[in-house]
Image (cartoon, rainbow, N blue to C red; front, side, top):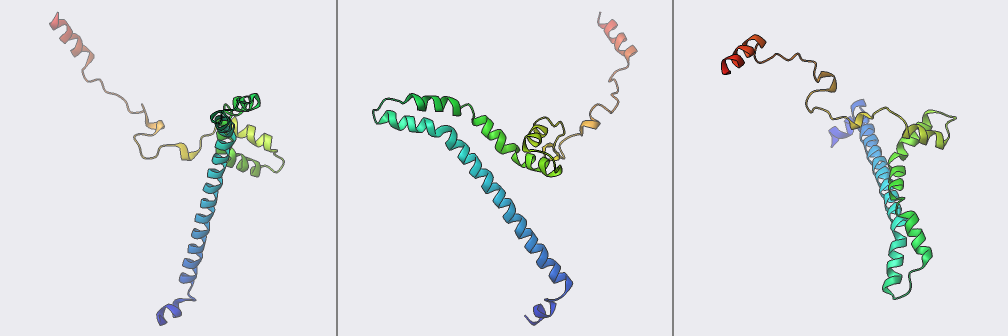
Length: 156
C-alpha cells in the first residue's frame, strides 16, 4: 500500500480517477435518460388504456357502461401512436431547439418531423458493400456474344 500512496498524486493516477468519475457520471446520466423514457412510455400506456380498464371494471361490477368513458376510450386509443411518436422524437426536438436560440418548440418539432437527414446510428456498419460501391464494379459477360450465338445456332 505504500507504493499506492506514493502513486496517489501522479498525473496518471489523477487522470484515471477523473476518467472513472466521468464514466460513472455518463452511465448515471444514460440510466436517468432510459428511466425517464420508460416512465414516459408507461404514462402513455396508462393514459391510453385506463379508460378501457375503468369501463371493464364497471362492466364486471354489473353497472351500465358510461357513455363518457366510451367517448374517452374512442379518443385516446387511436392516440397511442402519437404518444409513442412524441416520446421517440423528444430528444431530437430538444437537440434541434438547443441549436437555435430563437427556435420555438413547435419549430423544432416541425424541423425534426420534416428533416431529410439520416442519423448515423441508423446505418448498418460492416455488413456487405456500401451503397456507393453497389453496382460500381463492371460486370464481365460469362460468354462472348459471338460464342453464345454460335451455341444457339448449333442447338437449332
